[in-house]
Length: 365
Image 1 (tube, helix red, strand yellow):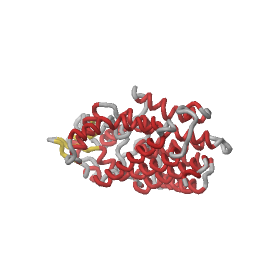
Image 2: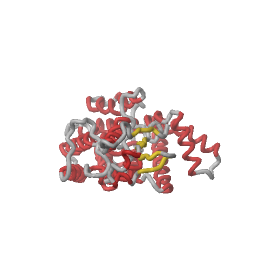
Image 3: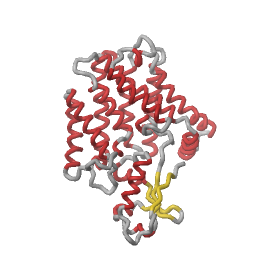
Image 4: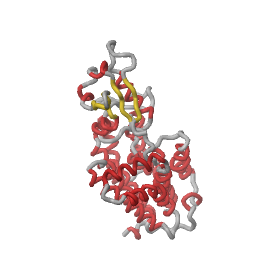
């Protein structure tokens, strides 16, 4: 069946997978898309107006409905509407820049950039850049000492019945194997092996999440990638391994190349956000808690106080726990976002509060 798909049908299928993944996650995490909740909304720019009820619900509803319509009506203007709404909603709250939403938006962007009657093969090769970058950069970003330490610790905790030497070997192989998957997809002779590797990796992730009982929010994303990679690559033949970069060159492809290779490369030097650089499960991301002085503890809303935890003699709020419970996604892992959450907590200080009642701490480094 897949073998008989035209290039246009492949692009259309990947578009549908991207949309279905996003709407599934919106249903799983509805509070992420509204502003009236007990977790602060963090706009990218302080001057941005934050829609309040009922306008936040109207925008979220319009975003959801436009995607559903876009599944059945692949009109270019609808794609631009979906993309524009996502960009706006993400500017209003950066926590919506989760990798599953971002990858889907980037896929739609790669499609709607082209005019109506564009060569479908050009569009296909442009979309493919996103998936090549996903696996290549995700592997490269894991080449750091913290990943090896934390990944090994997690494996020992959950899979202690497996010999430690095997777990250690696997841990050191993971970054290279994942980056290699992106490279295998370049060549005709190794492409199917790359697809098998990608499908196996995502399948293992899904099984592990089900086994561990958490992280269900990324399951639709993993399914999306499995289906997309099979459709895009399984029967694909190219003249050379560099066809995706050098053949069918267009301004649209150049734009997507910037987002998939140049900007992620700049992340290595601190110039682009981690999650927007395909830095997934790399242990490079910072996890935060806010230490709260006793003079401020009772001032915060009761709905926030339920997230108080004791850390030795201190009262702290773990931001991932707080965000995960309300938004059903982790805090967007950039320092500027964590500092904004701290400012929100500080907004409840009064005259009886000591001068510096909070302290933002990175606890995983």
